Image (cartoon, rainbow, N blue to C red):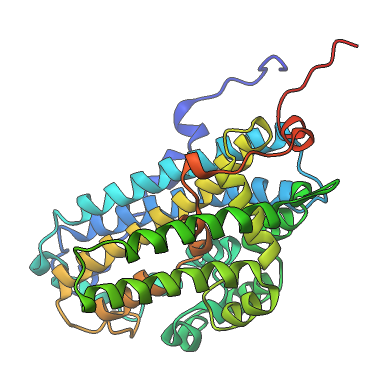
Length: 364
């Protein structure tokens, strides 16, 4: 590190004069200034600052996954930075509690002066969603119709260009597809997994049939549910069936990427899979925090506005409720739990695969 030559002053370094003079309530232009409008501005400015930091971290992660290979030391850094993103998201979720110190009447005292400005016009949040993998075709209908409304031409053109670029979801899918251990010498993961799942499902079927406590109706229902479970496993392992259910929206990842993620999750204790598992877990937690943010935002809007229309023209609470349920990005990783086997039912890996996934030292 080079020796500092020019003295650095705290206020100048942080540009506090500019920064602290950037809160300009509009209510004062029409009468008495609404006291809580300053809080409203500062909270949203803080959101935008943290969005900037999240995008800064996300950009570095996407640069790593844009390459044809991801080295272990890079994955260590990626996991570290994504954990930072998760901490920031948790802070953003807590920040909503500060906003909720404002009563509905406090908000109504300046709310109408903000029309048609709304969170729809947060370009950084739109960049965040698109970069993570929530592109227009995956959004709910209202989003598809209105995502680019009320934006300047420059912003619209920029976001439309970003939609054409690979997202982190796309990069991760390609990375999982390249995972070399699905087929390793004479080993094929899905064959080992299929044998184990057949054994598990046969045992479960036997338990159901031997349960004398079940009524005919209960037995019929459990047999139906068991058949559905078996069909899910068959769809996972059969390429044609998988592509059919994927087209119907039950999967977003390709079959190979899904199987790779499942392999990593089941054998996460293997040294080679530890960092990939942490990475997948980070993406799951980011999606969870984003969903939680939408939910808390939805509850706050209902508390402040009831069933009123949002300033951006959406149905307010109802719109946010639908995005909470539908605008998920990494659901495939959540749904892996459907296909996990109990630890004691995991099939033993062949020696050559076990050695390749671990730390193996030969003194020779």
